[in-house]
Length: 497
Image 1 (cartoon, rainbow, N blue to C red):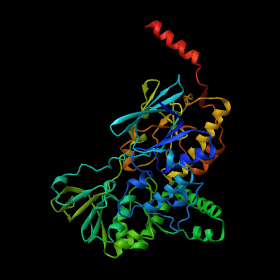
Image 2: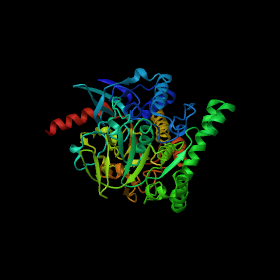
Image 3: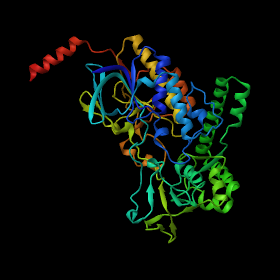
Image 4: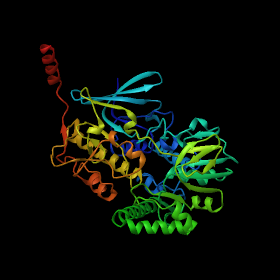
C-alpha cells in the first residue's frame, strides 16, 4: 500500500493552496492530492453557467502568497481557474494530483498512527495510507444541486436546468428565460443571460441584499503601477479585508443603519418603487451573504428592459411556464433553478477511528478546522462572512506549523480533546441561508468557548493560527505506540478469545 506523510483530498482552490504551503513550509514531507473529478479547480471547473464569477474580490479570494494581477477584482470563472492552474504549475503540484480518485472512506488506526484511505477509481477500489489527512473537499455536493419539489415540473414543455448542471449546448438565444432564485448565482445569471435572451425574469420568493461594486479595483490597479507587485497586492488585500470586516461589524452592531445604507444604494440604481418591492429583505444584513454585482450589471439589465424581477411564490409549473400564488402566470422557454446547493461535508466520505464510525454531528470543531477526538485530520473550511481562501490559507499555515512541531518533538498523533465541561455545543454558524439551515443536523458543532468557537474574524485568526501556541493544552500529542505494545495487545486479545 502506497504511503504518504500527508494526503490532501480535493484539488480545488483549497487543495492546491494546501499543496503549495506544504512545498514552502514542509519541503521534506511526501504528499499526494486525490481529486474525485478528472480536472483540478473544484468549483471553478465544475460550474459552467453564463457569467460564472467570484462572489468575493480576488485580492482576498486569491492566495496570500500569489498576487492576483488581473485588472478585474470580481473575476470570472475561467480567470480564476487559470490562476489555480498557474499556482499548481508554479509549485510543481501537477504530478502530485491523482485524478478520478473519489475518496469514500478513511480509517484511523492508533496502533499504526496512520489513516488507511479508500478511493474509488472507476469500478475499482484503491487503498493508500498517510500519517495526516487533509480534507479540502469544499462544503457542497458536486453531483447535484438543491431543487425544491415544485408541483407540476413534469408538465413544463420547455427546458429545466440547475446552474450546477449547465452545459455549453444549452441554447438560450432569443428565448424567454426564468431564473428562480435571488442569491449570488441568480444575480450573476440574469445579466449574463440577458445579453442574448429575448427576456429574463428573476423570480424570487424573498429579496436579498445586493451591493454594487466596481469590477475593477481602482486603488489596487493604481498601486500596481507604482509599487512592486507583491507590495501592491498585500496593501490591496488588507484594504479589502478591513473594508469587508467593517461592513460585517456594522451590519451586526447597527443593522438598521446598514439596511438604510444598502437600500439607499439600490434606490439610486433602479428607483424607489422597485427597490421597495423587490430589493428590501426582511432579515438583517449579513444574516445571509451579501450579493455583489460588479458595475451594477444586474440593475443595468433591468433598467434597459432586458430583465425584470418578480417577487412571489410558485404554485405550480405549467406547460408554458409558471403559475404563481398571486394568480399571475409567467411564460418561459427555459427555467433555471438557481435554488441553491446541497451541503455535503467532506464530500460524504466516512471517517472511522479505531473501527468506530465518526458521527460528525456529534463532534465539535477545534479552531474551525479539526474535530474533537479525531486524530491527525483537518478540514479546510472558509469564512461565511468573508473570502473562503482567507481561512483556508491560515489553516494550511497552521497545519504546516503543527507538522514541523510534531517532527521536532517526535510526536506522531495529534488529537483535539474537549476536557472543559463548561464548553457547550452550539450550531456551527450563525447564518440563516437555506443551504446551511437544511444541513444543520448533519454538521459538526462549534463550542461556546475558545478554542472550540469559530471566530469568523480574519484578524483574530491570524493571531491564533500564525502565532498561537501549538501545544495549547487542548491538543493531545502522542508518540507512535511501540511495536512491542502493539504485539502485546494482539497477544492478549488472542488469549482472551
